[in-house]
Amino acid sequence: MNENNYPKLHNATWPGIVGKGPDSEPPIPFDTMLEMTAAAEVDGVKFDGIDIGLLDPHINIDSTDDDIKRLVDKVSGYDLEIGSLVAPIWAGSAMGSKEERATFVEMVRKACHFGQRLRELGIRPSGIVRIDSSSSPQAWDADPEGNSKIIAQTFREACDVAADFGEKLAAEGEICWGGMQSWKTMLETLEAVDRPNMGFQADMAHTLLYTLGYNREQDRILPPDFDWSDRKTLEEALKTITKALRPWTIDFHVAQNDGTVFGSGSHDKTGRHCQALDPNGKLDVVHDAGYWLRDENGVLTKAFKHICWDGCMFPNSVMNNQQTWNDILGTMIKVRNEHGWRE
Image 1 (cartoon, rainbow, N blue to C red):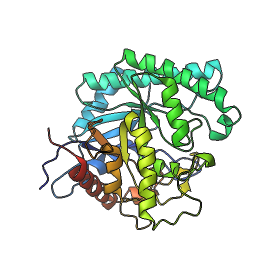
Image 2: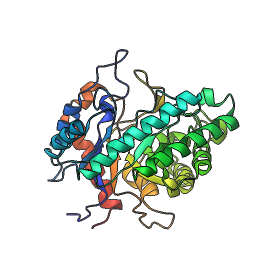
Image 3: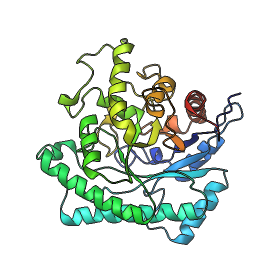
Image 4: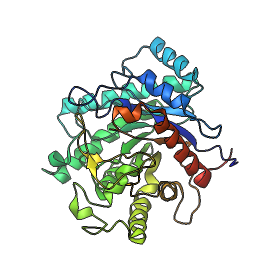
């Protein structure tokens, strides 16, 4: 039996919302996501916690302190902790008007207050507040240099607000966000923000797409018409992006991807999240997680205390199947056995 107890293993609840809605399938309730997470078990090991989106209809960003206490009581009743939070910043673009950017920063402030209360109530020992640019690559492309400067300024203001609450912000590396749509633009954005509480959220399904240059062809690493059986070339590409972005990484999602893009509901196309055991998955999930969890010399970074599974835009039939979550947990356990530690 492996004795590693870190990093803690979390499941994300926002896949019950992301890609759902009137033009897709109905959202899966927060309570259902919580119950499925708590019920998952593999060889006596269970999930340690959840990461949550502060998004309707799951969680109201304007929750009162009493509402937050009720949430804590509910989650702790399942013997789970809470980790990273997603700030609902999409009402205001980080490169938009003065008013839009003020709205963006205000949403970060509300999320950080929420996170601080969760810490004070003892249920949140680790985690960040996740943000993105809330802008499309197409809009960003109209003026890359100018728009990047505005995004960096908005992120700096958000970081300064977050610091007042003792929070760190992590920018989501996903191809559907302007100024963040490639490994190079993401790195440039992080360097431009230059705040000690600004970091990167790596998601294995999304960062794989960075190697293919979706939405930023000039930053492609793998050749066009790449042969996925060429594992050596894929590993070299993964080493390139992880070497650049690992030093910034403060939040990490274990995930699988089949090398394609996908969108549903109102969500733009991005890296397709596949089921943990999908035979079409292009990643060796357990091995490739090590590129993010270990440095170039193979030494554990221990840069974050928990890791999370993200499986957005799965059909509801898949998400309502308990075996899905057992398979995910089983994969997460293998990642911890291979790249974890004991405290």
